[in-house]
Image (cartoon, rainbow, N blue to C red; front, side, top):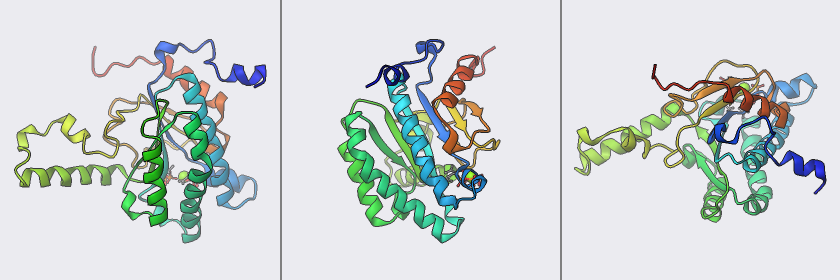
Length: 249
Ligand code: IPE
Ligand code: IPE
Ligand code: MG
């Protein structure tokens, strides 16, 4: 490794380790626009978007961030042209296959959040193999929100809880925040401290509705394929200047 590469792997000196977010979530938006600006088909933007995500994962792991959650495919993204949906689903498989070794080497724990049953069977199998294989790793928790929708997640938690009540396993008054959270796709991952959205859009687009109650939000105009280490550094700098109050005076 060159000296410059080693330098990139350490936390920049003006970021305070004790003030780093433990959990970063990211809405990876703007792949299509990135491609359009270059006269390329949208799918080329998705391909480049994978490179941004790989780099962000490595940076988070190097800088000691405990969890990264990335929005890769929403429950509403099925409304896109079939060709684009097929490309994305195939891309997930290709990337999982090609990156699993590297993620094992970096001790990444891979998780998927979303309604996975609706995904192609081959992808479902790859997902469960990847989760199983990386389960005992001790590095960053990397969650990929795939066929994820916040409203749908809340409904499915409600249904699962209602069934337990119906079976007499749980009483209505016992349902508290912890019970509810344990029925979400993100159970055990916790709430993000920082949510980044690229491409300038000021909306949540059905991402982590329950979990972002007190998350700090950072929006950048950078399109996802252009979101590099410097962009991430700027997001962290902004985060470190925030005063998180959680309702206190
Ligand atoms: C985000 O980029 C990737 C996915 C939603 C899968 P977009 O494809 O939404 O890109 P824009 O927003 O059209 O530029
Ligand atoms: C949100 O982006 C979903 C992902 C990044 C996977 P979209 O591009 O689907 O969101 P909208 O449609 O602009 O709100
Ligand atoms: Mg978009």
